[in-house]
Length: 391
Image 1 (cartoon, rainbow, N blue to C red):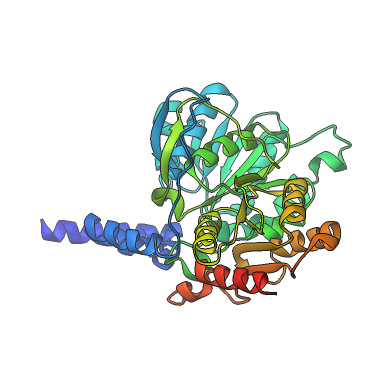
Image 2: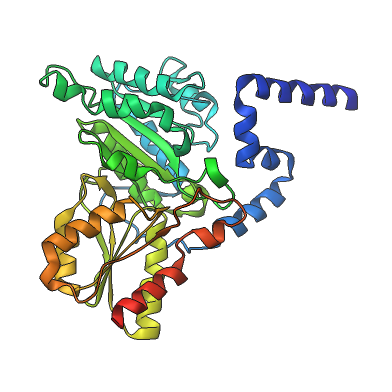
């Protein structure tokens, strides 16, 4: 029996190497997770994932019917289920999605809707997006998954030079607006160089697509459904550290959250704090610390859509508060905080009481063991806020 198990283990490892998954499993730390007891993995994951933020669920929404407790990956699954049920042309494809995906976001969908609507692709991101463009051009709904946002770069040409420009170069005779690209995004506690990146700013420089990042399960489902139904190609980045750490009540039935509309989560009068994805929960803690320790009232804004972003909501807030702090995980130089800062400086110059502050990742590759020092945690944000108040 032991010999058979060993032989099976060798066969599995050989298959992984041959299939191209070996490097990804090892570098992601996923293989270690497979080999450890489930309880040990769960405990370690909780320690890692909750290190630099505390998830704050939204109040339960009663406007959309019955709700169910879901974490973020289950909310994504629910949105995909709703889309496949509503739209007979919708298909989901990507690496390993047929058996549920590495984060389980498509679990059960192939069994429910069939192998012709939920299917695996080769390990070729350029091919995945190119295939999706072709499907979308025929009028069908294409939902592509890139297994990690770090791997989206081989598809960069297809996204930037094909998907984003298809409508423009044909004079709107043809378009691939029914293409949505999903991808796990951001730091996770142990992802290192190739499983922690936040590449939203690369695509923010590309007219013709929309870029969206949710902060919670409720937001994820509503925004993903809006992306799938939007008439423009969309990139939907999912904060993977929230897949299991974020849990709240989510409507079972489909609903939509408008794109390109930021949300004021907390109103305030002294400082405007802007973030998206996981970082929203960091700045919410900073707002509480500022109120408690400094008596400073913070207005907290979740940008939600990176492109095209909600200039009006942010500028109106800054006109009121006179101060702006923007925070994201991606490196400082060329990050999307730079675009927000530049626009606000142009629109609200006479209203500013202090220089705009950007609290972001460092201009280095994303580290492994030094991740706690790299991420823009609440202490870095609080220190920047305190300096703004004392300016």
